[in-house]
Length: 360
Ligand SMILES: *Cc1c(COP(=O)(O)O)cnc(C)c1O
Image 1 (cartoon, rainbow, N blue to C red):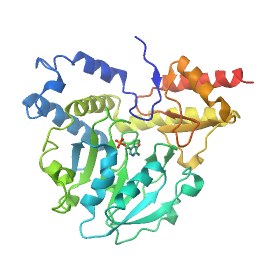
Image 2: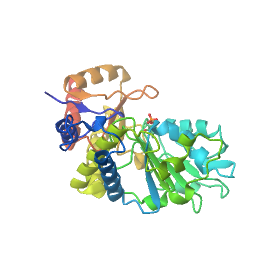
Image 3: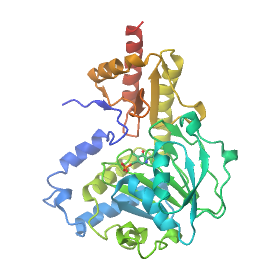
Image 4: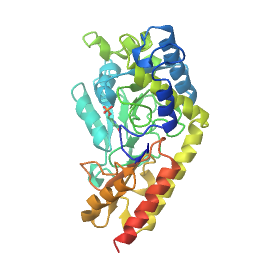
């Protein structure tokens, strides 16, 4: 058996140790005689798995007691609607930062429910920058402010957390959650699809401050009301049990590795190595402004774009896969979430250098 270095943006690589553990527990979880997939979500065994996953996530992210953690389905894309449905209350307007493809989609969806006030728009730079903090003028009457701390497609990451005063701050952390320690109390709501840095697809995590629950209108579907899930420990209906279990294995492993401050150090080192290699070469370049380069998604382009296909093909032969950039931007993109090892980064850098030399 050989495993490749998988640079996919999502679904993304999972830690090998986690997959091995899942394999070992596949047919018989802890003497239960069944797979976690086959368990009743209301049974004692599964309840213990679910509770431990939540406790470990709380410990990892230092989530304050006045926040609920929800384990939902529907992907981050469902949150584009659930956020306005649940947070608008009697208000009619919300602030959004437009900094890439994902925030754009969030905005499109929010427009179905409220007036969207675009506080910042970086489309002129083809989304390769983030707005200057001093330029952000929020509307004090907005129901909330929404932004995307890490835009997965172009690889742009905010180097700061916007200060929105008393207006609730909402963040789509799909591609940056668990990559470093953040102060959860600065956010009213954090959401993330699992398939980038948490676990398998099918699970969506929502971390929400309790005072924001219960504001959805009665006409809204109960399944789209956060309160439904908060009141029922995410078991109002059948949750994505196996993805929740695997996410729990990932949380356990991160705790063993020293938690998120330790992961932040590792991620910093990995990204620095890769960006340095890109910057040091005249052959590769990064389209993203230096102050906001993502630690998780590293796009790069070749001076000669005609060589893209060859680069991707040759890389795959060396076991370096899924390096093709998003179809909307082209070039290459290496997604280097927690599960990507430093060894994988070294292998990529070494291949990049070999490829460059073979072309001159
Ligand atoms: C991948 C991604 C999404 C979409 O997630 P789904 O779970 O597929 O809906 C949304 N936002 C960001 C920042 C992403 O990276």
